[in-house]
Image 1: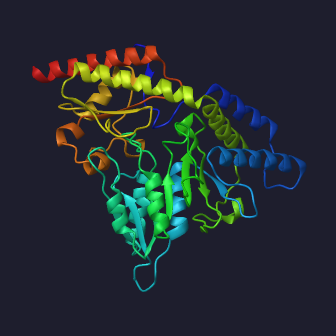
Image 2 (image 1 turned 120 degrees about the horizontal axis):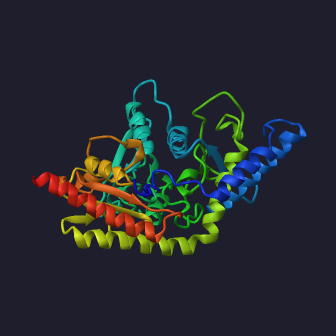
Image 3 (image 1 turned 90 degrees about the vertical axis):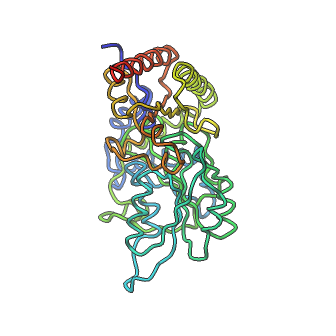
Length: 392
């Protein structure tokens, strides 16, 4: 088989060598439990807190003053989103009355949509905000659902399927005017574009290290100094009693190192990935007149292309591409293998034939131009073969 080409960085991005080295070094240098009082424990604690503080700084948290913002380490973006929603809103009233309202967009990742469903089953009212044909959240609908009982709005910063960026600054202004807290799932944007937690006036923000070439198994929830959340797990007093469990020094250092690597190369990476993505899209659209680049008319992440191969079955196409050595996906890895239409593409009003042929191609720090040129060749060849097979 030809050399494999990995175009599924939005699912998980390969670990950078520098990150792997940092993880190994931290594993050997800090054997102690950061909760222990002996010297080995204190050294581990210092390394952990240095990584926590640096991650917060790079993401725009306010860490000075008597009441700084807090950075809670989690097992990843899914736990961070669950902690944000359920830690703030979890629980129901014994009399069955509505505790309050939560608003989310119609295109949220399952790790936000499913906790919202759980809250809805506990008598919370959940308002779902629509999007336009490019997948951009409708701000007028957001303003309409901001009611006196609205306790929280949760909106992703960048869509994991289409890469379309959401108008979070405008949404933040609306929420502030109505005195409503705003949480953002920024998992697909952190490590790809600059993110300023305090500048966006967010109450909470989630991210995951493996989305930006860091280790799997660690993420973070940044919480503003004046926002109180409850634990959703129990069994320890770590992380201010909010998130129990012994913290991994190696994973925290690895996450910090990956973010530092992006920070040093951010402008170069953004320009290079945008050029590679556009090259990939343009070549495919030029050869396949029925193909559509979804969300192309809206601001997008520099690394993400979602192409509707109209007339093709997305599952069959992804499997054929895998056989040809091109790794890509039909959307969120958390919904991988589902035959149901994508909620994001459905919310956008995409025609059925286009939605059924939608394939996400996501690039990353390790993607090269020769890989994109070869991937384009393989994709077009696979499409030609599938067309010929279908026409027999």
